[in-house]
Amino acid sequence: MKDKKLTRRYFLTLSAGAAVGSWLTACGAATPAPEQPAEAAATEAPAAAAATSEVAAPAPEVVTISFSGWGATQEDEGVRAAMKVFEGENPNIKMEWVHIPDTNAYNDRILSMAAAGTPPDTGFIGSDIFTTFARDAVLLDITDRVKGDPVIGKEGYFIEPQETQRCTFNGQWYGIGSCWVAPHIYYNADIFEQEGIEPPSNDPAKAWDWDHLLEVATQLTVDNNGKHPGDSGFDVNNVKRWGIHWPTWWIPLHAAMISNGGDWVDRETGLVVADKPEAIEAIQNVADLMGKHQVMPFASVFQRSETSDVPQMLEGGYLAMAVDGSWALSWLTELKITLGTAVLPKMKQPATTMQAHLHSVFAGTKQPEEAWQWVKFLATEYYQLQFLKIGLWLPSQTALMTDEGRQKWLTLRKAPGDGIHPEGYEQLITEFIPKYGQVLYMPPGWTKATSVLYPALDSVFVGDQTAEEALVAVVPEVNAILEAELKKS
Image (cartoon, rainbow, N blue to C red):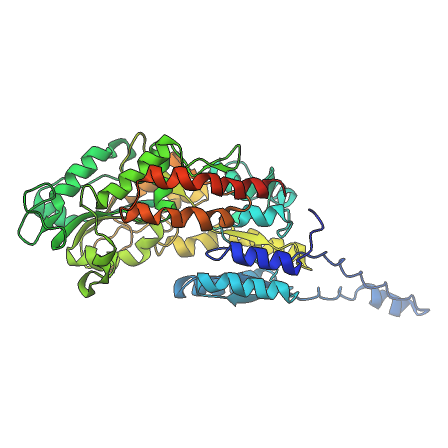
């Protein structure tokens, strides 16, 4: 499908199938490089000829490279700052930032630009749509550029094998990861101290097993009468403090699944395997935190003014532990509590999910070399450091994980507003995530498939179905979608 055109049908298909967190732009042939200016004609006057030979070469033509992306204020400011630095280093390139703050609106905006024949040159690509775009020749193959680069192509520059796993399709590179992010535990250390309970650790060798998590979460969950889950008369509708919150969307669920030996997708076949016993058990374990064990707040809890979101609950003492992405540190560090972090509890083995958006060159760019220079710049230390320092990102570059590298960005949190990273956070970075983190493979057609898969799980988390009932019923339908997509590859 090397010569695939962005037809109206293709546009509409992807728009419908990628309603949440997916992105598109058009393909097109690159224009040839401008011809070199002709040599000046010789004159009869020797002096004039000599002068001509000393005339400086004309300045290179300035080209504009557009870059699309989402993000709130911090990312917006970081991208703009990076563009100024890049333009200073590359005076022949002017950058244009196509900022679309709302990730849900991002998809529609990029689709509209593509349909109009004015796609950006480069941009953010969601990991869930990446392989679909690579298959359909929407993205430029940058394999030779990556492998031939003396900096980012050097062995050991990135955390491997995870970087190659997420950036390649059929063995070819179509993007470079922006960073890494991964779920882990955040906790209110003041609550643990008050209750005399040892908190979880950042050391994966000390990861709690699932039974211990349930034991501690039960101790920490208490209703307004001082009763705990399992006590006679415990009132789940009037809980003063909950033990844990585990989000039920795909990344935190994937972390639970791989800890139990399961997965969403089999990388070899490209088909969903969430109906296998290991995956079913993991999802049921998470659902049981709410229904069976009553240690996790249910949806209606978040409709109350004093417990409207997880940060508010942690800060107010209504919640002891919360599983969330590493990116959440950028705002949780501001909470007026003693904030702790820890590895996820294990079912069979320690595990977490490594994920982040990619930076790609769109195949429709008329300036592939300049576009590549920008994407390469985004994979260097300067750009990543901006977001590491504020707790939004984790490094994908191994040099930033060393003792020397961490000194450039990791700051010990002593109090709200004084440092970012809680004590022991470096163990998450050096021991837990690179050694136990796994990348979810999302095959072509993944966004279509998950539009059927994910809603089927809603019934599990409200207690209407078991995980086995829901997944055994929906997975064949999901795999029929993926099998049809595989035939297009």
